[in-house]
Length: 212
Image (cartoon, rainbow, N blue to C red; front, side, top):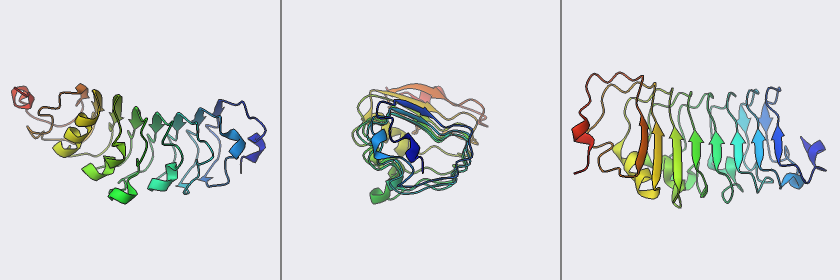
């Protein structure tokens, strides 16, 4: 438990990076830390995040869980963060999949999300259901999927996100995409930034990806 921070009611930023933290649960954070805006937990040994671990941190806007050992996520891990959380980094973990059922969507009710970093994991297959929680997105959104094992980016995922935001930014660099379906980015008019470098595409026809 990190209850010894409980008396710091005015604390806005807490950096606990490069420690030996391995587990987060519902008692880790004191309810008196509800004013916290930024929490850095990068470069620890976190392998397990239990349900409602971040529930006391109702005003958290920035959560950094990068460079840990997280291999599995569930929807209730981020319960209570939906109204404020804007940036979430799960980069450089051991994720091979994301919850894909509608009632178990990892990002359910994370309405304010503007940046999601999933780079440096082991993701290979993406389905539209994984992103259903973003149903209320209306602003800019950066999705970083670089340095994974993605072989194909489903057009359903791109089109779904493109309909939700006015400024969509997508990083798919350094994956294993050997082919790009002409429909993947077709008419995704809100797509403002696209990075496909470091893949294995032998040929790309730009004209086929343009909406006339």
